[in-house]
Each structure stands twice: as C-alpha cells, then as structure tokens.
Image (cartoon, rainbow, N blue to C red):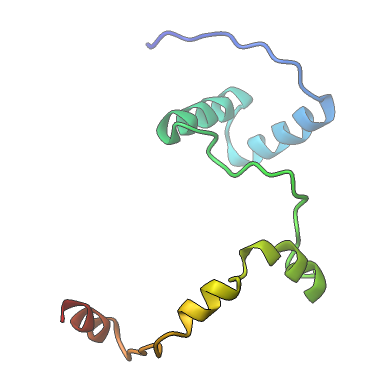
Length: 104
C-alpha cells in the first residue's frame, strides 16, 4: 500500500455537499475525486482545466451580440485578414488529396 497524506481544507458546505452527490452518482468518493484532480495536475504540470475571469457563456441561448463581444479579441485584425486574402484558398475533396498537395 502506498503512503497517504491527510489534507485539510476549508470549503463551502453547500458546494461540498453538491459535489459529494455528483461523486456518489459517479461511484467515487471525495478522496477519489481529489486524487484524480491531483493526478491530472501532475500529468499536465498545471491546473487541468482553463481558469478564466469571464463568466460562462451559454452558446445555446446567447444572443449574436453577446457571442461577438465575447470573441471580439479572437477575430482577425486588418493585417491578418489581408494576409489571409493574399492568395486563393485551395480546396481539397479528401484527406488523401490534401496530403498529396503537401508533399509537392
């Protein structure tokens, strides 16, 4: 049996209870969930999910304006658009055709 460590943390009671119910449905304990999280941190050498200060945007019922505002910083600027338009975009009918074009 491997060595274990005891962790103590202060957590919100309501969140802990809600999470325990979810873990129970998954057939795991809180300890299992913590071990899974710690394993993923070790594998990724980072938090295993994106951290953001942006509130979650539900794309199923978001307006076009909300979506455009959220992703405005990800749309190409004028210089990038010009570069994309410099030469015509080649279209291929299959992956094989695409790979052949890359080899030439």
